[in-house]
Image (cartoon, rainbow, N blue to C red; front, side, top):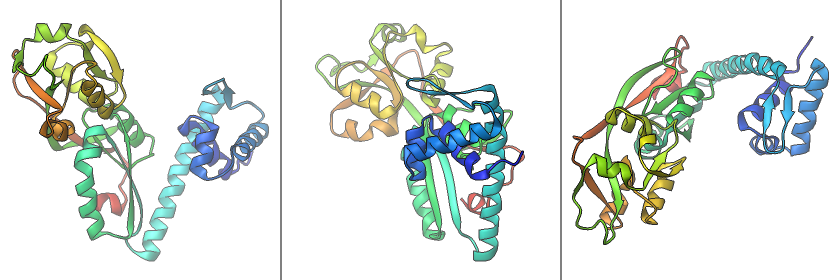
Length: 288
């Protein structure tokens, strides 16, 4: 059986993007073309690779097997192309980074700017998710380096600290909170609280400091980004524990304020740079 590498690459894009339409947009082709290529691949291997449900696609057993080896083959292909380009043209190419919300949005931009000043011929792409997603991107080869607030799959990645941050209790600067400077942890637990999703490094750090799950709090909303929580606090939906970096502008403008949690000390946490174990980095990644 001779598998078409182009069809495998399209199939992997569909799996990783989670839909035919998103894969088509990424590859700059029509959705019908992408669907047709996947059908051709299924016809060639003689079995369905995807179960097409109303709002999602699910890998079949055969699809899981083909994706596992297909992604590995494509990673090797990308490595070969990158190294050949560097051999022929010098230090050039693409560098894909990933990061969780806080390091990617607040710490990486000036670092990328400094790097680009030294290596203008290297194109840098930064993908933003939560810490769990960032670690997964590195393990699966979708990014060379990750910048996260919590470590997931530690047996498959190497990590080292690269920065730090402080978490603070953020509340709306309304009449209800304006004269409150501190709150007991027991009182906070009953206050309407806004939480990040379970894969978030911020949530993981908060739960580690508390010594128990945030599910014991009065959670009135769970959001996939710090920005969404920040806006929800401004809308007076609830309060949350966030990075001080993420609310500096709103605090300076008087829209939000911080309140001390009496039972906790300073809430410091580290950020980590991660890469896949036993996999050499590209010269661009090494330079970064």
